[in-house]
Image 1 (cartoon, rainbow, N blue to C red):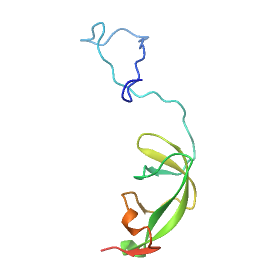
Image 2: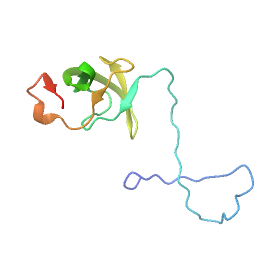
Image 3: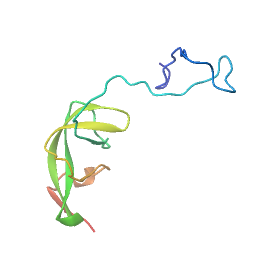
Length: 109
C-alpha cells in the first residue's frame, strides 16, 4: 500500500477492449463485503468505525437540531453504518459542530 493505493494484478476473462495495451493503468473498486438491510449515512467529520459519537439530528422542519449519541459500525471511504439512535429518514448534520459541544440543542436558520 502506498498513500492509500494498493497495487493488484488484473486479469480479464474476455478479449481486451479496443485501445488496451500491456501495463495500462486500471482504476477500480474492490468489494470486500456486501451488506443487506443496513442503515448508513455519509461519513461524519469525526466518525471512525466502531465508535460512539454525538451528532445533531435535525428537527422542527429544519429549524432546530438536537444532540443525539450515535453508535457507528463499519465504514467505507464515504459512508458509515449506523448501529443505534437513528432511524431511516432521520436527517443529521455531518459537518464539524465541535464549537457547539456544550449545547444540547441549536437553532438553525
